[in-house]
Length: 321
Image 1: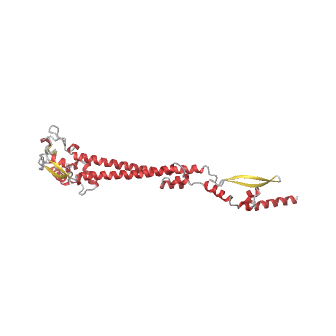
Image 2: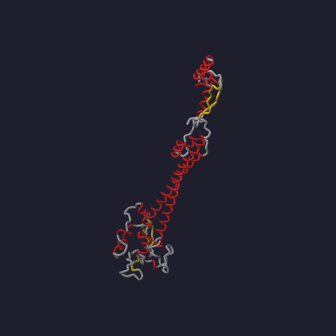
Image 3: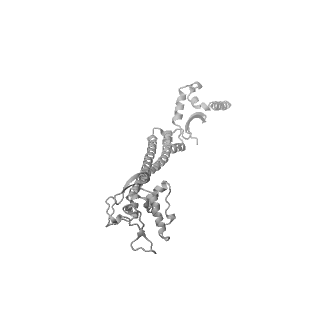
């Protein structure tokens, strides 16, 4: 019995000494065989190719630079190249349509205040003028503010910028009380046919306690095919028809706004591309991790156990988490 116990103890001691190389010991391999060069590359190869991908890292990469997280998780994926292509397209769209908006903005600003035009008065006289002039606007403002203290025409109602700011260019097209500076309105309503300034007259039926004023101007005196004025159909001086210059200017501004709007849509698309790329990077990382043998520390272990007075070889599947 003592010999049997001694034998068991010797076997257990031998197993403990060689536990770290139990697989080699089990298959009868010596230490020199383990150190053979051809074994190491295979082990390294498996470790690198089955390395777990960090989904959070992949997401951050693609949120910063669409496609980077996909390249990290699975460089062979179609989306690895799709999201960078979309990124380039969105940036190009922003640049192109913003540039077109700037160009059209320059066009309507030039049209309104930076170009001298030859304008023909009602009597055939030709004058050289800018399409929009603050001097003409201010003259009408002064008259309106002096007509009656009970109406809306006072200094706070007219706040046109003194310089050609963005706010100025918005006001002269957006608000009807700044229509007075446009050349065609002024020389059709505020002057006679020769361009001589005229004061406004009462609205039909107007009286002192019910102030209402209108410039009769020269439009009832003749027909004008170019501007659409007619003796039979008088043009209201507070409508688009009262200044076709203003109407064209508004159309030009709307064209510029349309270009900027498309540019903003590309900006939203750019943000959406970053978000979608981040979510897709998570998907790819998880997909890549499904086939990872070492994703959770999963490995095979070989060892021996002593049961029923026999040494028994065993294979165990271990998962560290």
